[in-house]
Image 1 (cartoon, rainbow, N blue to C red):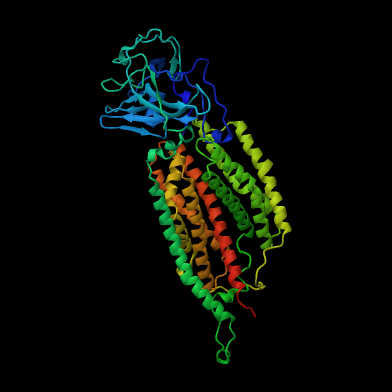
Image 2: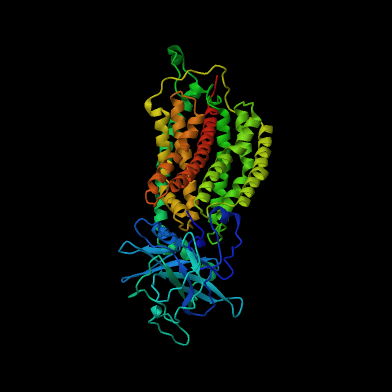
Length: 612
C-alpha cells in the first residue's frame, strides 16, 4: 500500500512540501506528487550537498518497537521521484556489474548481511539533457537516473530539545557539520566536473538515530535520445521483456483459435449441412411408410427461443452490463494502442476507463431493454434501475471498503472526499441518465424477431450425459479462452500490482480480439451439442460457458499472489477484493459475447429449415 513520502522523516523543503495539481486518475491510483528539498540547477554539477539531519528514532532492539524507517525498509518500500515528469530509474552497482532498473523507483534502504536495516541517505543523481530544437539557451531533460547508497557521515550530533511521541522527526540545523564532510572524501574536483561518491570502502548508515542526508548531481549531454522518445526505455524496461515473448503469446493464442476454427469447420459445418439437407428434403414413400422418427436439434424448434426459466431480468441486466464493459474495454485498448494513453500522461488511462464506462451507459440500457422486452418481461423500471445501479453499485461498495482500509493504514490509496463526490456525480449525473435514455429507445424498438414460433407447452428434456452438464462445459469452455491470454495476463497483473510500466497495447489489442473470438467459438460449439441433445435451455448456459474464463483468471490471480510479499490482512483484502471485482466484470463481458453469439447462431440455423 503506497504511503505519503513525508510520512517517513525525510528532509522537508523550506516552507513545507507543496502538493502538485493532480487529475482524477492520479487521485484514484494513489499518486500524491509533492515538492522536495533537492535543488537542481541546470547544467550545474554538485557534490556532497547537505540536506538536513533527520532523527529516525530508535533502532531495532529487543522488546522495542522499531521506527518507521526500519518498518518501511523491511517492507521493501521504494522512493518514487519525478523530474520534469520523468520517473527516476534506479541504478545499482556491485563488484561485477552496473544494473539500471526502469521501474519501481529506488529502495528506501536495505537489509545488511548482519540482518540490520540500513538507510540510503545519499543519492547520486544523474541527469541527461540535450539542447532544445526550437529555442536557444533552452534544454530538455531526457533521462533521470538515481544511484542510492548508504554512508555513515562523520558529523557532530545536533542536540535535540524537542519532544516527539513517535521519536521520528527532522532537524534542519546543519551548522555543526564540517564542510567538506570528511566521509565524502576522497573526491576530485576540477573547474568543470566532480567525481561522484562511490560506496566502496564506506561504512553504511544504520536506520536509526540522527542521519545526515546528502546528494550529488551530475549533468551529461546526450544528443542521441530525443525528448519525444525519452519514455521508450521506461516502457520497454530497457528490453527486459523481449518483444518475442509477446509474439509467442500471440502465436500460442492463434494456435488455439485455429484449432477451434478447424473443429467448427469439421464438426458444425459438415453436420449442419447434413442436418439441414435431411430436414428440408421431401420424405420418400418408403420413409413415410416406415414412419421414421425425427431426431436432432430440429425437434426443439418450438422451444429453442423460449425465454430463460431462471430470472430473465437478471440475464438481461448482466448482458447490458457486459455490453457496457465490452465497449469500454475495446475503446480503451484501441485508444491506448494508438498512443493516446501513454504512461507518461499520469492517470489518463484510469480516467479514460472511467469516462468511457460512464458514456457507455446508454448502450447498457439499450441492450438490457431490448433483451428484457424479448423475454416478455413486465418490470421495465426495475430492469433499467438494476442496470444503472447494479454493477456500479457493487464497484462503489467495494471501493468504499478499500478506501476505509486505506484510511486506517494512512495510505495514499485513500481517496479524498471531494474525489468521492466527483465519482458519485459521474455515476448518478451522467451514467444513470444515459442508462435510462438508452433503455427508452430499447423499449421503443420491437422485440428481437425469431424465425420459428414458440409453443405454449414446454417440451420435456431427455436425460443428458455427464459431459453435457454445466460443470463440465464451464470447465472446458473457460480453459481454452484463458489459455489464449494468460501470458499477457501476467504482464497486466505486474503493471497493476508491481508498478511495472505496461506499454504493449498493440499486442494487448490482438490478444483481446483473440479472447473474444475464442469465447464465441467455444460457446457456439457447446450450444450446437446441447441442441443436438434436445436441451433448449441455452440462454444462461451460453452465458456461463463463455463467462467461466473469469474463474480461471481468478485462480491464476491466486497463483500470482504467491510471489507478492503480503504481510497484512489489509493486503489480502485489497488484492482479492479488486481481483474478484475485475473477474466479475470479465464474467459479464465474456458472458455477453457467448450469449449473443449463440443467439445469432440459433437464428441462422433455425431460419434455414422448413417447419411444418
